[in-house]
Length: 106
Ligand SMILES: [Zn+2]
Image 1 (cartoon, rainbow, N blue to C red):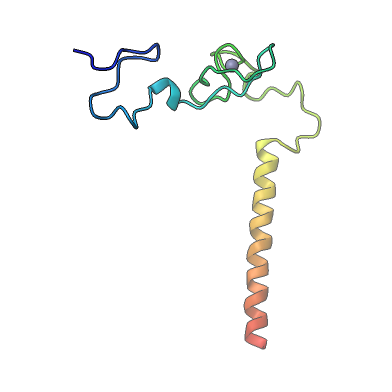
Image 2 (image 1 turned 90 degrees about the horizontal axis):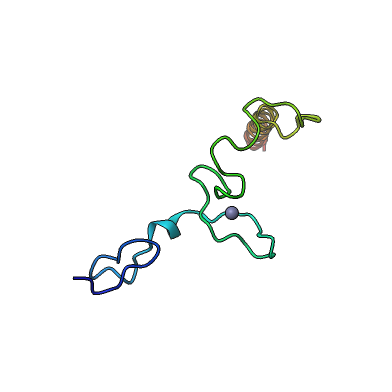
């Protein structure tokens, strides 16, 4: 028998774990959209996406991979971001080497 009634989120939590039990739908990250009423959307985001199925997270929504329709300069593209990361790592490594050399001389 149920000791706790089932909720709309699913079956009742197992006995003895009611305190820390979170229904699966509440474990999902929330949709980041705002409703027309101005409040936050309360639906869970689609797995692997940041929006729910009603707010652009549905399968097939969005531009196809490699779409360049809205490309202006590519600064935020994955390739450019990777290039900046490589540059930053190189600079950081160089700074470390300079420090070692300075310590050796001092
Ligand atoms: Zn939503």
